[in-house]
Length: 188
Image 1: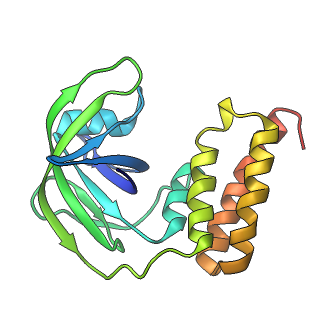
Image 2: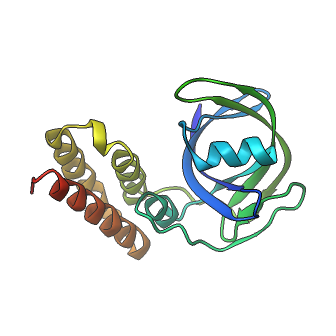
């Protein structure tokens, strides 16, 4: 199973890096699969730990994709790391094994501490639309304009029916990002 999460990691200068990431849940913990090169990959290898944050604030997902990476964090309890301040739950994980790969290494991690901060009340369709649009934005460089336009058109349906202010703000960032990408291609 893959869960859409926010992974926080820190570098040797204690700078926090925040990245949306689909992580694989396995019987013994998690597999984090960052692409090479990536800050998340370098940080986890250097520190040997990270925090997996479960958030229903889709602005964090959209913000990280569109360059808005300044989100409040607090110190993790059992590892040298940072937790998103307003996350619903988090898992502090340690790296136990690295399977290197030329494109996407597998970082096998075990949970050393887990905290539920607030109950999850479910996603609405707009939150789903923003998550899918954020994933779409991370893959623009290898998708056709027709595919991008079709996906945005479809995702807009659920967004328009169920969005609140957070979802609308996140959506506007993603649409601006897509429009900027299209402009670089000379498309409208």
